[in-house]
Image (cartoon, rainbow, N blue to C red; front, top):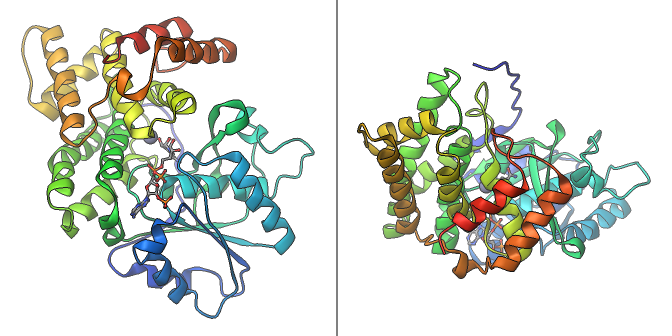
Length: 385
Ligand code: NZQ
Ligand code: ZN
């Protein structure tokens, strides 16, 4: 097992009716800005629940944070935070609203004269932030219990992430009932996103981590069992609760500690979204099977373990076992509504060229195998046509 340090300070408040707890969780004297997305919270009763819990307080509303939150939108909120003296941010929505809010929180306290985009672009450390609380309405990103944020910049076609210990929400309310209004497309995205988060921390290189491996396999098996039920039986509370907790556990750092991590599928997927606007989950369903095919020798031991323990596939022919496990994974993604293909998402040869150029320019190496632009190009060509 590798060395690690783990400090996760999020106060998780899980279950039915828990939005009412905002009354005690949000500091009484805070100048609150409530951030939200395109309006789903005004159609599914979440907005009313939040406002009832915060009755009598001054709350500034900032709506319109879009999926794959934009730097340009966030900077408008930063101006309001500064002029109104906002000292608490309450994010009510999916991962995009929360990620945008994390950027707003850091950018509003950014004292350097440079553009706060440097936090994402150059990894400039975040030294101060407005505290954040969260009501998460879409189980997928795990953002509700981690310090990550992913923000896109329209003017440069960039989609970049940053991490800060200060970006962990002070609290996160997870009420599975609010996820019942999700469209099927977003349910599917959330299941695939969670599945791939777990795989990026598990299908790498073995370093003797039986606890983390079995936790990862537990989340994957739960997704396989419960995922399709969320689509066939959308009002089933227990299914929604299990998926919501799976998403949080999938990326709260727990599975990553002491193991070798990959994150190559995410790095490539973010660029596909930047150039084509494809949903985050869909890009992952497209890339991961191809990445596994390309790195099958390097990942062999873990791919065989995954085949055995998650899908019950064994045999002497290692390549046949790995191929069958990849096929099962693709079928699972299809079964929840992610029938991923390059043509469906507009990942043309020209788009591949642009993505490869980005990696060439950045010069960064990705995955646990430290691959570069050439290998990324091969992986993109291996993606389902
Ligand atoms: O904007 P509104 O109107 O709220 O509608 C949203 C949006 O259109 C809707 N939605 C959310 N909750 C709903 C709902 N509709 C009905 N009922 C509800 N309860 O769903 C749509 C998608 O929302 P979004 O927040 O974009 O989805 P998600 O939570 O999947 O977040 C995706 C973003 O997170 C980033 C992705 O790259 C992408 O930008 N990620 C963040 C990570 C992190 N912070 O740790 C890790 C992930 O790997 C990922 O990269
Ligand atoms: Zn993801």
